Image (cartoon, rainbow, N blue to C red; front, side, top):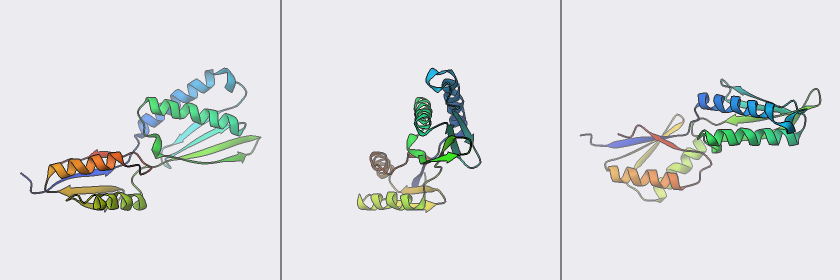
Length: 165
């Protein structure tokens, strides 16, 4: 029996499911009458972890983005991990919106999570490792309390818990 237990708090979006959601949203946009002359499209760049929404004007972009969010929510993807950019005018009388898929926990938010655990006075140790937060303790009950605390807080990202040992 180990002397210390731990878990990792991570924030990831599965790019395969994102790709499937994008394909479903593109099919819906192609079939909808209100997008008939909008030239709307959604593209996923898995290396850069960005989504690009293109259409003729800002209103159609917002509608296409809403369709995408609906499809992603139905697939169980974390909507909090999307950071929406500004609508830019592109060449050929079109506009585009770049949405970044946040993967991992940024250092500033990891520090907020760490501080929340300290403020709760739980007997746990939280360490920032790369883009995740490792929480360890001698008691599994304290770890369960830490998970409940992190789930209950609003930190601007969707947390998953892995490697519970």
